[in-house]
Image (cartoon, rainbow, N blue to C red; front, side, top):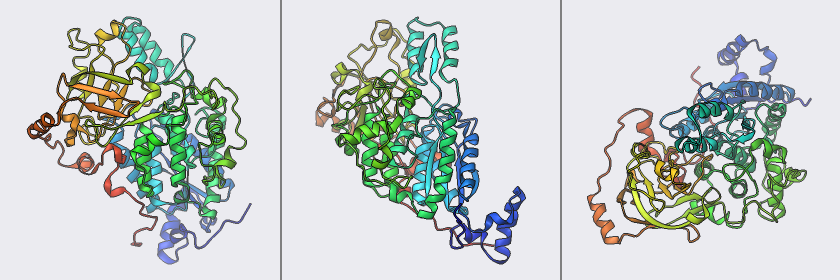
Length: 578
């Protein structure tokens, strides 16, 4: 084993200090049973874990951390585990997205404030992965992401069941009488039958794949199921690798380049990934000074087909994706077609091309070849513009109904998701299949936190009539496990005076996805008159974190980060007070 002791290492400002300061740092650490020899200048590796029983997708990460520790010890480092908050969408109210930025701040400050030379980031649920990447990128110490892995496939009555995706399906079945309450209660226990995050291509799986595509996660590690022994092998390998990265000074700033972000955007299109990746990648890019605009997401995916046949866009689940070859097989296919950059360096110290060279596509039903894709090029995320969304909106084409991608219909406006839910089951609700449901005040500032509420269920009377989809427009987000013809992230949001605030019942809304347009067929003079009448909503928060959030959150097209967190702040520590 290589001697990795180094007196000039960052951690030695603590553990190598002379006199009283050094004695304080070392002696208190020794109450955990560490011998004096572990403070000899070897790399100190932080293991940041969002393990929490309040975030079910992350609950098993304490065990993953043990595997990381083994790898760090093997490579001659000193592993020190520390907790972070967990932002689980399954339980947190009003939405975990409200706390993504808070978690990113916490991760950043914990890394900077402590005697660490590198860090392994353990995440699971969909907001924890971007939050940890954002925090680590702002500090810029060597870092490796290890996501906790997807659950095993759900099973119900001989069929595969996808977490999240089947929630919407079962709800529709319940409303239309195809499923009883007792059957639904039984089915909910069949969706999440092991440790791990959603096994559909929801936001958690998407962001795990995106982290790998960016080069921040070891090749193939996004897809191993949480309970597969190879998940622990991957974690142990990450622990070994991060010690080498400290020696090589391989930092996020060398990995998170423009080309890496281009790769991640194209990979997201190829896997049928979540629209939430748009917001998280934009926020992460802002932390490393990469100018990533909303239109880049449209431009870069127009020639990328959807290769992965997973729910909610397709049939299979993450366990199948893993056994079919995982993300390396997808990236190899894209690279062979000239759709990825092969040169960016990754956490392995090797390039994307070198990492994907041994990849093999085992099942062409799950991961289709570039020449015969699951869905043709141009079916990924589309960015819309128009008088209803001057700063942009997005739609996931692969999860939408083709016949609704060009549509004109009258608006039925609701000032909150709750207002819609209160009447959605009313048989007298004045809607039909041509109606465009508009949900507003669900954006970053307006809700607050931009919840996953945009794909509201269809009105009960339309479901019973056999209608399975209709156009919905909202300034909020949609779960990556969701589906339907839903226009999301309408920017600027209604709460800050965006045009969505001016829409009235009956106004004609025109959706033209091929033409990348979303507009209101109301003349400019009338809209100007309505704007004169509009008054901003009263401030609801005067103190606490939610006040901070509403005062400083940027709009969706900027990643909904805090403006004061854009850019990096490095790893310098405050003056020693001892």
